[in-house]
Each structure stands twice: as structure tokens, then as C-alpha cells.
Image (cartoon, rainbow, N blue to C red):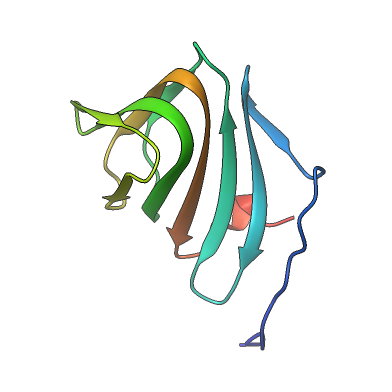
Length: 113
């Protein structure tokens, strides 16, 4: 297996992919075990409840969301963070335009550029 030494990503306004209407994501960097992505979430939008096998940790940079994990809503504001085990249902209601940074392990192959 090839192991990478390191990866650097300089700031950019390109590379965003539509997740659902009003929500985009951009892969920032990834290594052998983790992948980090930025999500831009538009006010009034919904990230549908879903699940995936990847563990997911996140940090709300700006805005306001209601993050639902395993059926329980959590009022998240800038500076708040979360960890969601793999295969646990989660989704979000976007109260204000928001930006979140999330890390997935193992690497989400479907998120690699």
C-alpha cells in the first residue's frame, strides 16, 4: 500500500460540489486514514437524514444549525463540535447560512477529487 508523505491545500473558492439544493461541500485534504471537508449550508435548507460507515467529527465555523443525531436534535452554534460513529443516522436543519468542517475516517473514497 502506498502511503503519502503529506498534502497541502491552499485556500480556494473552487472545487465545491452540490450535495443537495443550497448545500455544497469541498474536500480540503486527505491522508491515509482521514479526509477533511468543508460544507457550506444555506439558510432554510435541510441536509436529509442519512448514514454511512465512516466515523465523522465536525466543527461549526459559522452560522447556526440543528444537528439531529440518532433522532435527537442538537442546537449547534459557532465553536460547537460533534462526533458521530459510523452507521448512525444524522441530518441537519440550517437556521442561518453556515460553514462546517468535518473529518471522516476511514477516508471517504467518494469525496476524493
